[in-house]
Structure formats: C-alpha cells, structure tokens
Length: 376
Ligand SMILES: NC(=O)c1ccc[n+]([C@@H]2O[C@H](COP(=O)([O-])OP(=O)(O)OC[C@H]3O[C@@H](n4cnc5c(N)ncnc54)[C@H](OP(=O)(O)O)[C@@H]3O)[C@@H](O)[C@H]2O)c1
Image (spheres, rainbow, N blue to C red):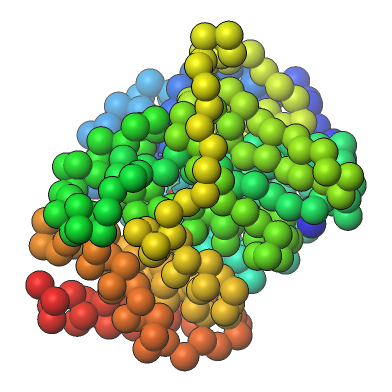
C-alpha cells in the first residue's frame, strides 16, 4: 500500500498548470469550477472533449486556454504539453486508459476520476505511480480512504470500507428491476453525475469498479475490502486499523471537495461546498448490499479476484450493455446477463501491454454486442 504521509508535492507560489481531459463532462466541469475558485493556485492549460466542442470552446475562452483536443487520441497530445504538470483524467470508460498510462509514463501527476483506467489497466498503471502524490484519486470513496491514511502506517490497516448509496433501486425485487427504465435509473438519489456512472450506480457495478480501483490504489487484497450501503452518502468511506479503530471521512455530497483535494494535496484550500451541520442530518442508515438482487457487484469482484485481463473483459461488456440500456434497446437485467456471458467466454491472461488490453476490450465488446442482439 502506498504511504500517503510524505508531503512530496511542493507548494510553490506559481499556480500548478493543469490539463482537464473530459472538461465538458460532470467531473470536468466541476474541476473547472475548482480552478475558477483558485486562480492563484491553478492554471488551466489544456482541455479536451468528445463531441461537445461548443462548450469546450466556451471554457477555453473563459480560462484563456490555448490547447484543446477532440477525442481520446488527440487528448494524448495535451498530456505531452511542456507546461502541463497535472492531468485530470475525467474521460469516461476504457477510452481513458491510454491517457492514464501516458500521463504517468511522461512524468506528470495523474488526478484520476476515470476509474475504468485502473479497473482495466491497474497492473500497468500502478508500477508507474512510483512516488507519493503521483496518482491522486478523484473518486470520492478513494479520496476519502486516501485522507484517512494520511499519517498512518499501511501495515496497520486491517480493512477498507467502501461506502455505497445503494442507488435509486435499493430495496427493489428482481421482478421490479426487470421493468425499470433508463429514465428511472438516471434519477440518482444523492449524486449528480454523468450518464454512464449513474447507470453503474443503479446496478451497483460502480461499487464493483471501485472495489477493483481500491485494490490497485491501496494494494489491498479483495478479502479485506468491504462494501457498506450508506444511503445518505454522508460517509464517503472508512479505514479500519489492526487495533479495531476506524477512521471515516464525512462531508457534503459535493464532488468539488475530492476533486480539489486531489489538486491541493498535501494542502487543503477553502471551498464553497456546504459544511455539514451534523445536528440536523438525521439518522444515517448502514447495511450490507443486496448482492442477490444486484449481481453486478459480485461479478465485478469476481473479475477482480480472477485478475489478469478478466476485469478488462468485464468492463467492456458493462460499457456495451450500459450504452444499450441507455438507448432503451435492452433491459436492466440484461446488463448483468451480458457481463456474465462475456466473462464466461473470456480466457484471462496475465496483463502484458496496453495493446493486449485494447484487443481484449475490442473482443469483449463484439461478444457483448452479439449477446445483446440475441436477447433483444
Ligand atoms: N460524475 C461524478 O460525480 C463521478 C464521480 C466519481 C468518479 N467519476 C468517474 O469520472 C469519469 C467521468 O465521469 P463523468 O460523470 O464526468 O462523465 P461524463 O459527464 O459523461 O463526461 C465524460 C467526459 O469525457 C468525454 N468523453 C466521453 N467519451 C469519450 C471518448 N470516447 N473519448 C474522449 N472523450 C470522451 C466527454 O466529452 P463530451 O461531453 O464532448 O461527450 C466528457 O467530457 C468516469 O470514469 C466516472 O466513473 C465520476
């Protein structure tokens, strides 16, 4: 497990120069809000999008950014900008993998929202994150765990508790889940996020991806990572130590807090995010996830435990099935069915290269499409 206690990042007076990949998305836009609040500390030098060039141009004008890119391949040029110090990878899906690898290979700090990078390529990425502060998690759960570990000895950690809201369908039966629509799923109870992660939250796949992400980031065996349902999302995750003590990270459900911490570490900066009054919060619910109704969580953890290229195949199947569900061409339960089918037909190999992972990704996508064409 990486020690988070060494303050390696310097707090020089010049603003840190950041590139935001996926600046038009939910995380990208909130990253720019953080940058706008701290012009003395952060300077945006590059922006990328996929299709929403109008918004990206508007952002470029607002922040005086000269370098913009469209698509994942062009985005790699931003990683190589001379002035870039930190790359915020807020792309969605396995399309963000190469940017994560390139960022670290090129000696830049990676502020990582794109969890699929670690799910697919954790075995390639983690050896590149060879010093404290090189890879900063943006995901709220992992940012929370990172903060709970500051000043602690990694050998004294017994378990990680990754919290989950349970999503909009918590408490539903399999029969009810068979009938839910994308519109139902997009009404997430506590977080306002992009479409893909919102569907992942409703299937609990998002938590499965986060368990794999935690396994890589904190070098923690799967047997010592627990998932805890906490519907109000007030507890962002917890770390349990060998003496039975537990440290939890709490706060508002506002992604600008973990985004900012990933950019400010080892400092903390002021934030306009709500400061919680715990006297008025009301009771917090705590419970186990319903893995019988929501099977994606166990499928993801099983892929993680198998290791090698299995998480890449699992992730690709999920991306294809989620896209189909969003288009309204398959049912909610077809998402898990597609993932299971692809995993059953994938023969995992040890991870050797990006090219190998991209080939596994492509093959799994084809198999997922074929499966969906049969069940539609
Ligand atoms: N949203 C959250 O609260 C949250 C929290 C924790 C972690 N995350 C993670 O952060 C990542 C981004 O999530 P998000 O919710 O911000 O997603 P999002 O709102 O869908 O934004 C995705 C961004 O990536 C760009 N993009 C999409 N597909 C691309 C492709 N194939 N090549 C290049 N660029 C592409 C989009 O550009 P266009 O706008 O032009 O299409 C957009 O800028 C995901 O991995 C997610 O799991 C998100």
